[in-house]
Image (tube, rainbow, N blue to C red):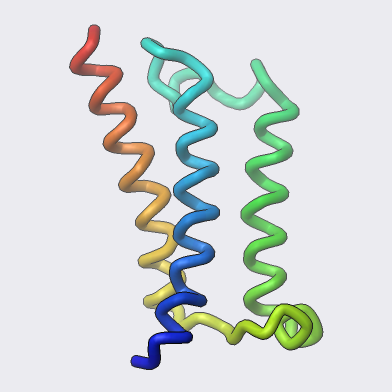
Length: 99
């Protein structure tokens, strides 16, 4: 695998991890998934926008040419999404440990 492709695969990973961190940071004690999205629709919209725009840049031909990126394989996209899930799980584990 080329170094440039690894860097390109890292960008969605960071974006998804940041969305997970933002969702978890809404409360110091309450689990993120229990809180739902109705309490802060702006954050929910931002999270959805980040994911949609990240996928658009990676997979829409005109956009990925403009940004100089290439489409990720399904496995690499799953790994990027897994980074977000991992960050959310770690942050939620810290919350649970503090309760």
